[in-house]
Length: 245
Image (cartoon, rainbow, N blue to C red):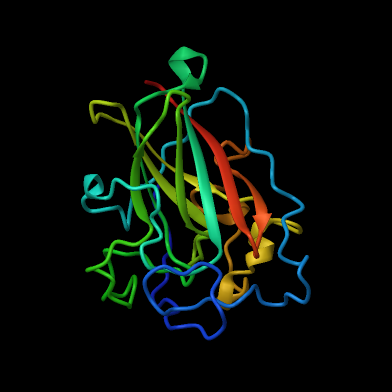
Protein backbone atom coordinates (compact mmCIF):
# COMPACT_ATOMS: atom_id res chain seq x y z
CA UNK A 1 0.00 0.00 0.00
CA UNK A 2 1.61 3.25 -1.11
CA UNK A 3 1.52 6.60 0.67
CA UNK A 4 -0.38 9.33 -1.18
CA UNK A 5 0.97 12.44 0.48
CA UNK A 6 3.80 13.45 2.75
CA UNK A 7 4.85 16.57 4.60
CA UNK A 8 6.91 18.94 2.48
CA UNK A 9 8.17 20.99 5.37
CA UNK A 10 8.22 19.66 8.92
CA UNK A 11 8.05 21.58 12.16
CA UNK A 12 11.57 21.90 13.54
CA UNK A 13 13.04 23.69 16.52
CA UNK A 14 13.75 23.52 20.21
CA UNK A 15 10.96 23.81 22.70
CA UNK A 16 11.07 25.98 25.75
CA UNK A 17 9.40 24.21 28.66
CA UNK A 18 10.76 21.41 30.88
CA UNK A 19 11.09 18.04 29.22
CA UNK A 20 9.48 14.84 30.41
CA UNK A 21 12.19 12.52 29.17
CA UNK A 22 15.67 13.75 28.40
CA UNK A 23 18.47 11.89 26.69
CA UNK A 24 21.49 13.59 25.14
CA UNK A 25 20.40 16.92 23.69
CA UNK A 26 18.80 20.15 24.78
CA UNK A 27 15.63 20.02 22.68
CA UNK A 28 12.52 20.23 24.84
CA UNK A 29 8.85 19.36 24.49
CA UNK A 30 5.99 21.24 26.08
CA UNK A 31 2.97 19.55 27.68
CA UNK A 32 -0.08 18.79 25.56
CA UNK A 33 -1.70 21.99 24.32
CA UNK A 34 -4.80 22.84 26.32
CA UNK A 35 -3.80 20.87 29.43
CA UNK A 36 -5.15 22.59 32.51
CA UNK A 37 -4.71 20.07 35.31
CA UNK A 38 -2.75 16.99 36.26
CA UNK A 39 -5.53 14.63 35.17
CA UNK A 40 -5.89 15.99 31.63
CA UNK A 41 -2.98 13.89 30.41
CA UNK A 42 -4.29 10.56 31.75
CA UNK A 43 -5.55 7.85 29.40
CA UNK A 44 -9.10 6.73 30.21
CA UNK A 45 -9.72 5.10 26.81
CA UNK A 46 -6.76 2.78 26.10
CA UNK A 47 -8.31 1.12 23.05
CA UNK A 48 -8.97 -2.58 22.55
CA UNK A 49 -6.28 -4.31 20.54
CA UNK A 50 -7.56 -7.24 18.45
CA UNK A 51 -7.04 -10.68 19.99
CA UNK A 52 -7.93 -12.66 16.86
CA UNK A 53 -5.42 -15.04 15.29
CA UNK A 54 -5.10 -12.93 12.14
CA UNK A 55 -1.96 -12.24 10.14
CA UNK A 56 -0.89 -8.61 10.48
CA UNK A 57 -1.46 -6.67 7.24
CA UNK A 58 1.55 -6.01 5.04
CA UNK A 59 2.31 -2.30 4.74
CA UNK A 60 4.88 -0.06 3.10
CA UNK A 61 8.35 0.08 4.65
CA UNK A 62 9.18 3.52 3.21
CA UNK A 63 9.88 6.26 2.78
CA UNK A 64 12.12 6.30 5.89
CA UNK A 65 13.23 2.70 6.65
CA UNK A 66 16.28 2.08 8.81
CA UNK A 67 19.29 1.94 6.51
CA UNK A 68 21.38 -0.58 8.52
CA UNK A 69 18.95 -2.23 11.01
CA UNK A 70 21.47 -4.70 12.45
CA UNK A 71 23.54 -1.78 13.73
CA UNK A 72 20.88 -0.77 16.27
CA UNK A 73 20.40 -3.77 18.55
CA UNK A 74 19.09 -1.95 21.62
CA UNK A 75 16.00 -1.74 23.80
CA UNK A 76 16.24 2.01 24.48
CA UNK A 77 15.91 3.75 21.12
CA UNK A 78 15.41 7.29 22.46
CA UNK A 79 18.93 8.31 21.42
CA UNK A 80 18.71 12.01 22.21
CA UNK A 81 15.08 12.80 21.38
CA UNK A 82 12.75 14.33 23.95
CA UNK A 83 9.04 13.85 24.50
CA UNK A 84 6.61 11.88 26.62
CA UNK A 85 8.19 8.57 27.57
CA UNK A 86 6.67 5.48 25.93
CA UNK A 87 7.35 1.80 26.57
CA UNK A 88 6.38 -0.38 23.61
CA UNK A 89 5.58 -4.05 24.29
CA UNK A 90 5.27 -5.94 21.01
CA UNK A 91 4.43 -9.65 20.95
CA UNK A 92 4.96 -11.67 17.80
CA UNK A 93 2.61 -14.63 17.29
CA UNK A 94 2.87 -17.51 14.83
CA UNK A 95 -0.33 -18.23 12.89
CA UNK A 96 1.09 -21.65 12.01
CA UNK A 97 1.08 -22.50 15.72
CA UNK A 98 -2.32 -21.16 16.86
CA UNK A 99 -0.74 -17.71 17.27
CA UNK A 100 1.50 -18.86 20.11
CA UNK A 101 4.37 -16.50 20.84
CA UNK A 102 7.22 -16.78 18.34
CA UNK A 103 10.58 -17.03 20.11
CA UNK A 104 13.83 -15.73 18.58
CA UNK A 105 12.14 -13.56 15.98
CA UNK A 106 14.00 -10.35 15.10
CA UNK A 107 11.93 -7.18 15.40
CA UNK A 108 12.95 -3.79 14.01
CA UNK A 109 10.94 -0.68 14.79
CA UNK A 110 11.26 2.97 13.79
CA UNK A 111 9.11 6.08 14.09
CA UNK A 112 9.24 9.87 13.91
CA UNK A 113 10.09 12.23 16.76
CA UNK A 114 7.78 14.67 18.54
CA UNK A 115 7.96 17.15 15.65
CA UNK A 116 7.36 14.53 12.93
CA UNK A 117 10.99 14.07 11.83
CA UNK A 118 12.81 10.82 11.04
CA UNK A 119 16.48 10.15 11.64
CA UNK A 120 18.75 9.02 8.76
CA UNK A 121 16.89 11.24 6.28
CA UNK A 122 16.30 14.88 5.46
CA UNK A 123 17.52 17.82 3.46
CA UNK A 124 14.86 17.32 0.80
CA UNK A 125 11.30 18.35 0.06
CA UNK A 126 9.91 15.36 1.93
CA UNK A 127 11.75 16.32 5.13
CA UNK A 128 13.45 19.67 5.10
CA UNK A 129 15.61 19.23 8.21
CA UNK A 130 18.66 17.06 7.58
CA UNK A 131 18.99 14.20 10.10
CA UNK A 132 21.04 11.89 7.87
CA UNK A 133 23.88 11.57 10.37
CA UNK A 134 21.82 10.51 13.41
CA UNK A 135 19.83 7.38 14.22
CA UNK A 136 17.24 8.24 16.87
CA UNK A 137 14.05 6.22 17.39
CA UNK A 138 15.26 3.12 15.56
CA UNK A 139 16.10 -0.23 17.11
CA UNK A 140 16.18 -4.01 16.93
CA UNK A 141 15.41 -6.69 19.52
CA UNK A 142 14.99 -10.48 19.53
CA UNK A 143 11.79 -11.94 21.00
CA UNK A 144 11.90 -13.92 24.22
CA UNK A 145 10.30 -17.33 24.81
CA UNK A 146 6.86 -15.68 24.82
CA UNK A 147 7.43 -13.80 21.58
CA UNK A 148 7.86 -10.44 23.37
CA UNK A 149 10.16 -7.51 22.71
CA UNK A 150 10.15 -4.27 24.71
CA UNK A 151 11.44 -0.90 23.58
CA UNK A 152 11.85 2.35 25.49
CA UNK A 153 11.09 5.35 23.32
CA UNK A 154 9.01 8.54 23.19
CA UNK A 155 5.43 8.96 22.05
CA UNK A 156 5.59 9.60 18.29
CA UNK A 157 4.54 12.89 16.76
CA UNK A 158 2.82 13.17 13.38
CA UNK A 159 3.33 14.61 9.94
CA UNK A 160 1.04 15.62 7.09
CA UNK A 161 -0.98 12.85 5.47
CA UNK A 162 -0.43 10.23 8.16
CA UNK A 163 -1.91 9.19 11.49
CA UNK A 164 0.49 8.58 14.39
CA UNK A 165 2.23 5.26 13.74
CA UNK A 166 5.20 2.95 14.32
CA UNK A 167 6.87 0.92 11.57
CA UNK A 168 7.70 -2.73 12.26
CA UNK A 169 9.77 -5.23 10.27
CA UNK A 170 9.75 -8.82 11.54
CA UNK A 171 12.28 -11.51 10.59
CA UNK A 172 12.73 -15.13 11.66
CA UNK A 173 15.81 -16.22 13.60
CA UNK A 174 17.81 -16.82 10.41
CA UNK A 175 17.04 -13.33 9.09
CA UNK A 176 14.31 -14.16 6.59
CA UNK A 177 11.75 -11.36 6.29
CA UNK A 178 8.34 -12.43 7.60
CA UNK A 179 6.37 -9.19 7.66
CA UNK A 180 6.59 -5.42 7.21
CA UNK A 181 3.69 -3.69 8.91
CA UNK A 182 2.71 -0.64 10.97
CA UNK A 183 1.14 0.01 14.38
CA UNK A 184 -1.72 2.49 14.83
CA UNK A 185 -2.88 4.28 17.98
CA UNK A 186 -6.38 4.55 19.54
CA UNK A 187 -8.01 7.91 18.89
CA UNK A 188 -10.75 10.03 20.46
CA UNK A 189 -11.53 11.40 23.91
CA UNK A 190 -9.51 9.85 26.71
CA UNK A 191 -6.81 8.40 24.46
CA UNK A 192 -3.09 9.08 24.47
CA UNK A 193 -3.46 10.85 21.11
CA UNK A 194 -5.80 13.34 22.79
CA UNK A 195 -3.54 13.68 25.85
CA UNK A 196 -0.38 14.34 23.84
CA UNK A 197 -2.36 16.58 21.47
CA UNK A 198 0.26 16.54 18.76
CA UNK A 199 2.89 18.11 21.03
CA UNK A 200 3.53 21.71 19.87
CA UNK A 201 1.78 21.18 16.53
CA UNK A 202 -1.61 20.43 18.04
CA UNK A 203 -4.00 18.27 16.02
CA UNK A 204 -5.15 20.81 13.44
CA UNK A 205 -4.70 19.09 10.08
CA UNK A 206 -4.08 15.69 11.68
CA UNK A 207 -4.99 12.63 9.59
CA UNK A 208 -7.05 10.17 11.67
CA UNK A 209 -6.91 6.39 11.22
CA UNK A 210 -10.19 6.32 9.29
CA UNK A 211 -8.68 8.57 6.62
CA UNK A 212 -5.11 7.30 6.75
CA UNK A 213 -4.10 5.51 3.53
CA UNK A 214 -2.47 2.70 5.55
CA UNK A 215 -4.97 2.17 8.37
CA UNK A 216 -8.32 3.12 6.82
CA UNK A 217 -9.01 -0.47 5.68
CA UNK A 218 -8.23 -2.02 9.10
CA UNK A 219 -11.87 -2.38 10.11
CA UNK A 220 -11.05 -5.17 12.59
CA UNK A 221 -8.51 -3.04 14.46
CA UNK A 222 -5.71 -5.57 13.99
CA UNK A 223 -3.12 -2.80 13.79
CA UNK A 224 -4.39 -0.67 16.69
CA UNK A 225 -2.43 -1.02 19.91
CA UNK A 226 -3.63 -0.61 23.48
CA UNK A 227 -2.06 2.46 25.10
CA UNK A 228 -2.26 3.27 28.81
CA UNK A 229 -0.55 5.80 31.06
CA UNK A 230 -0.32 9.58 31.29
CA UNK A 231 1.83 12.53 30.29
CA UNK A 232 3.50 12.68 33.71
CA UNK A 233 4.65 9.08 34.11
CA UNK A 234 4.72 8.08 30.45
CA UNK A 235 2.72 5.73 28.26
CA UNK A 236 2.76 1.97 27.74
CA UNK A 237 1.85 0.49 24.36
CA UNK A 238 0.93 -3.18 23.92
CA UNK A 239 0.11 -5.07 20.75
CA UNK A 240 0.35 -8.59 19.31
CA UNK A 241 1.35 -8.91 15.66
CA UNK A 242 0.86 -12.31 14.08
CA UNK A 243 2.95 -13.70 11.23
CA UNK A 244 3.13 -17.01 9.38
CA UNK A 245 6.46 -18.46 10.50
